[in-house]
Image 1: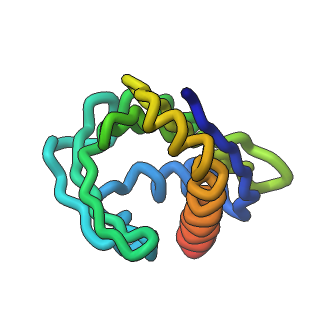
Image 2: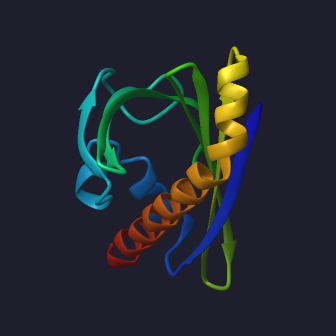
Length: 152
Protein backbone atom coordinates (compact mmCIF):
# COMPACT_ATOMS: atom_id res chain seq x y z
CA UNK A 1 0.00 0.00 0.00
CA UNK A 2 2.00 2.94 -1.32
CA UNK A 3 0.87 6.55 -1.60
CA UNK A 4 3.05 9.21 -3.19
CA UNK A 5 2.91 12.69 -4.62
CA UNK A 6 5.35 15.00 -6.38
CA UNK A 7 5.48 18.79 -6.57
CA UNK A 8 7.89 21.19 -8.28
CA UNK A 9 8.64 24.80 -7.33
CA UNK A 10 10.81 27.09 -9.46
CA UNK A 11 13.22 29.03 -7.26
CA UNK A 12 14.96 32.19 -8.44
CA UNK A 13 18.23 31.13 -6.85
CA UNK A 14 21.12 28.84 -7.72
CA UNK A 15 21.04 25.15 -6.81
CA UNK A 16 23.78 25.88 -4.25
CA UNK A 17 21.59 28.44 -2.45
CA UNK A 18 18.58 26.10 -2.52
CA UNK A 19 20.78 23.28 -1.22
CA UNK A 20 22.02 25.54 1.60
CA UNK A 21 18.40 25.98 2.74
CA UNK A 22 17.24 22.36 2.50
CA UNK A 23 20.39 21.04 4.17
CA UNK A 24 20.17 23.51 7.09
CA UNK A 25 18.29 21.17 9.40
CA UNK A 26 18.92 23.19 12.61
CA UNK A 27 17.53 26.29 10.85
CA UNK A 28 14.47 24.59 9.36
CA UNK A 29 12.16 25.65 12.20
CA UNK A 30 12.97 29.26 11.27
CA UNK A 31 12.35 28.62 7.56
CA UNK A 32 9.31 26.32 7.60
CA UNK A 33 6.24 27.61 9.41
CA UNK A 34 4.95 24.05 9.83
CA UNK A 35 8.00 23.01 11.84
CA UNK A 36 7.75 23.91 15.53
CA UNK A 37 11.15 22.64 16.62
CA UNK A 38 14.17 20.57 15.61
CA UNK A 39 16.43 18.60 17.92
CA UNK A 40 19.63 17.37 16.31
CA UNK A 41 20.61 13.81 17.22
CA UNK A 42 23.81 13.56 15.19
CA UNK A 43 26.66 16.05 14.91
CA UNK A 44 28.55 17.34 11.93
CA UNK A 45 27.57 18.59 8.49
CA UNK A 46 24.51 17.45 6.54
CA UNK A 47 25.05 14.10 4.85
CA UNK A 48 24.08 10.45 4.86
CA UNK A 49 23.32 9.40 8.41
CA UNK A 50 22.44 12.89 9.71
CA UNK A 51 19.61 12.37 12.26
CA UNK A 52 17.19 14.72 14.00
CA UNK A 53 13.79 14.90 15.66
CA UNK A 54 11.31 17.27 14.04
CA UNK A 55 8.09 18.46 15.67
CA UNK A 56 5.25 19.59 13.40
CA UNK A 57 1.59 20.44 13.87
CA UNK A 58 -0.88 19.21 11.29
CA UNK A 59 -4.66 19.12 11.55
CA UNK A 60 -4.42 20.19 15.17
CA UNK A 61 -2.12 17.31 16.10
CA UNK A 62 1.43 17.79 17.25
CA UNK A 63 3.84 15.01 16.22
CA UNK A 64 7.55 14.52 16.80
CA UNK A 65 9.23 12.24 14.27
CA UNK A 66 12.83 11.04 14.08
CA UNK A 67 14.21 11.61 10.59
CA UNK A 68 17.47 10.80 8.86
CA UNK A 69 19.30 11.46 5.62
CA UNK A 70 19.36 8.26 3.57
CA UNK A 71 21.10 9.81 0.54
CA UNK A 72 22.82 13.11 -0.22
CA UNK A 73 24.35 14.30 -3.51
CA UNK A 74 24.95 18.05 -3.03
CA UNK A 75 23.58 20.17 -4.68
CA UNK A 76 21.57 17.75 -6.83
CA UNK A 77 19.43 15.56 -4.59
CA UNK A 78 18.79 14.23 -1.12
CA UNK A 79 16.48 11.63 0.37
CA UNK A 80 15.12 11.89 3.92
CA UNK A 81 13.41 8.96 5.66
CA UNK A 82 11.20 8.52 8.71
CA UNK A 83 9.35 5.64 10.33
CA UNK A 84 6.22 6.55 12.25
CA UNK A 85 3.04 4.74 13.21
CA UNK A 86 3.73 1.66 11.10
CA UNK A 87 4.54 3.66 7.97
CA UNK A 88 7.77 4.28 6.09
CA UNK A 89 7.97 7.89 4.83
CA UNK A 90 10.35 9.02 2.10
CA UNK A 91 10.95 12.62 1.01
CA UNK A 92 13.21 13.13 -2.00
CA UNK A 93 14.37 16.58 -3.04
CA UNK A 94 15.77 16.97 -6.56
CA UNK A 95 17.38 20.22 -7.71
CA UNK A 96 17.74 21.02 -11.42
CA UNK A 97 19.22 24.24 -12.76
CA UNK A 98 16.79 25.97 -15.15
CA UNK A 99 16.25 29.48 -16.43
CA UNK A 100 18.82 31.12 -14.18
CA UNK A 101 17.28 29.45 -11.15
CA UNK A 102 16.43 26.01 -9.81
CA UNK A 103 13.51 23.65 -10.24
CA UNK A 104 13.09 22.08 -6.81
CA UNK A 105 11.05 18.88 -6.94
CA UNK A 106 9.82 17.18 -3.79
CA UNK A 107 8.55 13.62 -4.09
CA UNK A 108 6.91 12.33 -0.95
CA UNK A 109 5.83 8.76 -0.37
CA UNK A 110 4.24 6.78 2.44
CA UNK A 111 4.17 3.02 2.61
CA UNK A 112 2.31 1.08 5.28
CA UNK A 113 4.78 -1.59 6.36
CA UNK A 114 2.40 -4.27 7.64
CA UNK A 115 -1.05 -3.44 6.28
CA UNK A 116 -4.00 -4.90 8.14
CA UNK A 117 -7.58 -5.14 6.96
CA UNK A 118 -8.40 -2.07 9.08
CA UNK A 119 -5.49 -0.04 7.68
CA UNK A 120 -6.47 -1.02 4.11
CA UNK A 121 -10.05 0.11 4.67
CA UNK A 122 -8.89 3.31 6.39
CA UNK A 123 -6.54 4.15 3.52
CA UNK A 124 -9.27 3.43 0.97
CA UNK A 125 -11.63 5.78 2.80
CA UNK A 126 -9.27 8.55 3.92
CA UNK A 127 -6.11 8.15 1.83
CA UNK A 128 -7.07 10.77 -0.76
CA UNK A 129 -8.03 13.29 1.92
CA UNK A 130 -4.78 12.67 3.79
CA UNK A 131 -2.73 13.02 0.61
CA UNK A 132 -4.55 16.26 -0.25
CA UNK A 133 -3.68 17.72 3.16
CA UNK A 134 -0.10 16.47 2.75
CA UNK A 135 0.22 18.07 -0.73
CA UNK A 136 -0.91 21.43 0.67
CA UNK A 137 1.65 21.22 3.50
CA UNK A 138 4.43 20.19 1.07
CA UNK A 139 3.55 23.02 -1.34
CA UNK A 140 3.78 25.48 1.57
CA UNK A 141 7.18 24.01 2.56
CA UNK A 142 8.46 24.40 -1.03
CA UNK A 143 7.26 28.01 -1.21
CA UNK A 144 8.97 28.81 2.10
CA UNK A 145 12.21 27.10 1.01
CA UNK A 146 12.08 29.15 -2.22
CA UNK A 147 11.52 32.41 -0.32
CA UNK A 148 14.46 31.69 1.99
CA UNK A 149 16.82 30.69 -0.88
CA UNK A 150 15.82 33.77 -2.88
CA UNK A 151 16.66 35.99 0.13
CA UNK A 152 20.23 34.64 0.48
